[in-house]
Image (cartoon, rainbow, N blue to C red; front, side):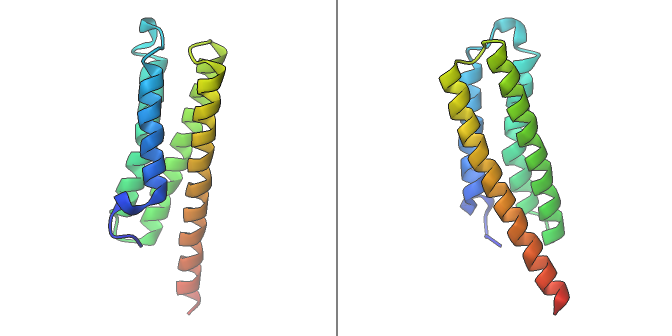
Length: 126
């Protein structure tokens, strides 16, 4: 495992996604400040925070569990962004950019989860 969560490409990409979500959500209507704006920001922060927290845990099983939480938060974020786009709070180009970045984070999360699970299976097989 990496020595620091900051070394993980998935964390770096997740953090970039969170920053982009914060920037884009500035344009949401003020009436959404405690609604959708808050929700998308919380979900985006949860993605990257769970990666960091999981990396700090003592076992690969715990790390895998937190990556699963991160994956769930990412899918929650994608759903919320899709709703924001349908409500025209996001431009089509902003939504497409966020969706592409989120899809990349999802791919990286799935890859890391697969790698950890394979390592765990190999360790129990020996």
